Image 1 (cartoon, rainbow, N blue to C red):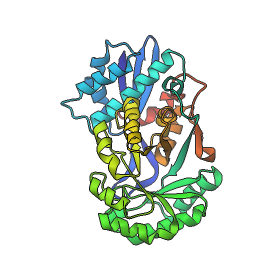
Image 2: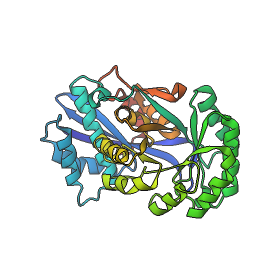
Image 3: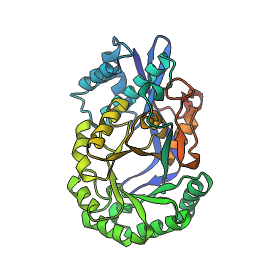
Image 4: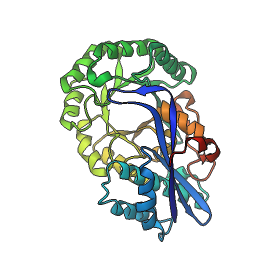
Length: 359
């Protein structure tokens, strides 16, 4: 099996930011896995430094392996990353390569990836995600109204915790505006990206009690497990975290402190580890939510019985629609899982991506 990678940096359509970070572009790293004239693809979102990890560290250790033996491929790659450090860039490389290996297997056997994994559902619930702290009131309104009133997505999320919690008044104003935009029937989610301190996060939730917020993501740093548990026990919304998990132990440690465990297939170790992390959550009585990269998640989300939803993240939806054929709409608040084409159901378009290539 041959493995290669390349990186594409796509500018955002407007400045984007959350409670603790701002950005003006997003880099997609595409991994190709090839055998017997068939190519599978997987991708992650991260720095272009992922590319040499794939080509220099991972590709050599899988070259002689049977492309059908995905568990053996995953284990060989995991072992190779020991000294590189799995969390971070190396974990992104492992994740994209594992997704590519699964896609290759499905395409070699001419079956949809979702059929190869097995399905618990054929339509995956999603929530609209954006509402960046950098948006003005009009842009936030247009985005949320588009999801709820035009596309029929009944759950949406905005970013709060602006300037690491220094702009609480604006956070509350934007939450109130979001509720006015979406009306009383849609669910309102918020994401502080770890911007608040423990009691500050509780106070914000209490101040917004009349807005019926259902989802409170990373009210404090995801590294503060005790703090997540404290907030969870003192607020009404479900507290969620987990998007920065790069290995199974991370999810095992976090599960006792949240109401819903987030997993990102492009970070956690790919489809192979996503399924194991979802089982860890199930053992703790939790549902899981797939973080970002929606079209990379569809097949594994369909295979996960305890899935709550997939994040329909504005930035990644836009990039995937630009660079791939076969992307799906989220009309009605759910996305149809690809079941009529081999593999993950999408085709990369190098002609569209060429201008954005950086590695």
